[in-house]
Amino acid sequence: MEYKIILELLNQISSHNISKMTFANIRNKELELDKVIAKPVKIKNKIHIQFEYHFKRIIKHKNILASDTENIKIILEELFSLAKDINLQTSDEIINVKISKKFKISINRKKIQKREISFEHNVKKEYFLDENKIYPFLVELGIQSNSGKIIKSKFNKFRQINKYLEFIKQAISILDTKKEITILDFGSGKSYLTFSSYYYLSNVLNLDINIIGIDLKKEVIEHCNKIAKKLNFEKLKFVYGDVIDYKNANEIDMVISLHACNTATDVAILKALDWQAKVFFAVPCCQKEINSQLNSNYLPIMTKHGIVKEKLSALLTDSIRSEVLEAYGYKSDIVEFISEENTPKNQLIRAYKINKNINYKKIEDIENFLNALNVKMFLINEIKRKF
Image (cartoon, rainbow, N blue to C red; front, side, top):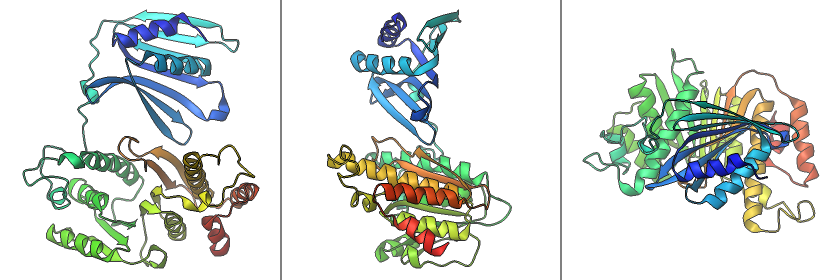
């Protein structure tokens, strides 16, 4: 598809004169793509165009060097073929583009007062934790030096913590903050995010927070308890044990499972369902269960290459997990936790309890879908057995 406006856009991008591009009203509904937002960002002192794809259940990012006009042209042509409504903003103009069903294009331009396009706001990010402030818990965890400087090799972890706290703040807004809030962190590991959550919720938001971290590594549990005691984090404790055996008689407000391997995430989901936890967060990894069962008889093209099969298995597994949560009265989606440049384990399943209804038909549909692929899933088997 060759539009003069695309060539104009490429020139504007090359001269760093584009501030924002929005592609909406997507033709192909099967893509479940709501819109795409593109803007210039500075990454490692080089200007990129960041394409942010807003799907129904997930947001994905693609960063392309602004100087890579060939690849940007390919993406723009694809977006122009998909979107009916396009809004383009330059330093001195707003351009609205409408493309009809028969791909007839109409353009409306509006001049605005000229403004300088700055990229610095893309570099300097406002964090929940100030990178220039000393946090004793970050020092103890080896993220900050004693002088308060973020250790270079840990800066990605610092960014990850701040992104995570953004999700935590959103989740807390649906909980009753007038009472004690209990959070269970399954597979807490070194507990960077556990300590950060406790500090932020207790010391910054001044909430009554009780957090319990559970892990199978005894030495890690002992180390984390020592740090919590040293910091006087009185209602943060770590327990040695297997997630599947953990029992708690008190009301559980939030269940967290970060980087739990394979079916451990499913165990956390089952616990959350059993306790009717109001919030569930999971960043799964090592989705081996479905991977080991997929074969070329059912998905010959998608299982030909190991890396594709692995990604397909992860997407299938996490999509089913999200659907299960929805079946049990949660509003669930999958969002990008942090950029793939920082970690490949970057998909967050988040779910908020909105009702107590159970959609048994949805569970049956999920099982039929798995049967069509000749795949069994621990989560579905346990739901049928327990619930």
